[in-house]
Amino acid sequence: MASLYLVRHGQASFMKSNYDQLSDLGKTQANHLGEYLANTGLQFDIAWQGDLQRHRQTSEGIIEKYAHSAGFPEVFTNADFNEHQGASIFNKILPQLMADAPELKGAMEQKGKTDPEVRKSILKLFFQSLKKWAKGELGLEGYESFVDFKARCQRAYQTLLDGMEGKSSGIVISSGGTIGVLTGLLLGISDEKMMELNWQVMNTSFTEFQYNKGQFYLKSFNNIPHLTTPALITYV
Image (tube, rainbow, N blue to C red):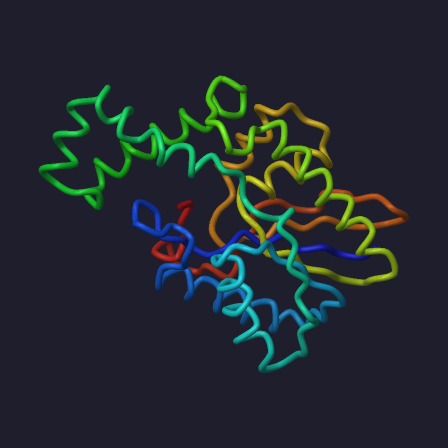
């Protein structure tokens, strides 16, 4: 059987003016993954990435370490592997959410966005918003709905199936929501369960699909053997 590695990007810049860039830790995570993959002796035949900056930066970080010991194929960029727009919608409605949560607003003004408790509370609001978005209870004109996002992931799934034909190993650098839905499509689970998978996917973790005769099979999910200390492990 052939193997396909689905990699979530490194830690991005949550609560910063531009989320779509890796933090210093995110770059380190990508380097660690590249080194790990090189040490396994894996030779990739095909590679894809989304067209977001954090995808490209993660690819670069992986290749920087991987290429020292092995060649890396041309990376095909495909926007179907991009993340959903749940985070963009959340950022748009955050002022209203904060207005409805005066205690949190006061704590953020007093302690700042980086305070652990403030950050935890904002993340809770974020996940609640994503759940509503996935159910179709939250949306904004001009932004992708969950139905549209799932359809895009179905196209991405077919791209991977077609691309893996005749290959022995492939890799795709994508995002947690996309990997959650791609895995959910393979398993045939509900939309709600797909989003629950999204929340479990760690930065630079890899999920492994096996490919055989035009079908994918799940071998493993959310692996982080390259992140050897707790300080390297992040979800956002």
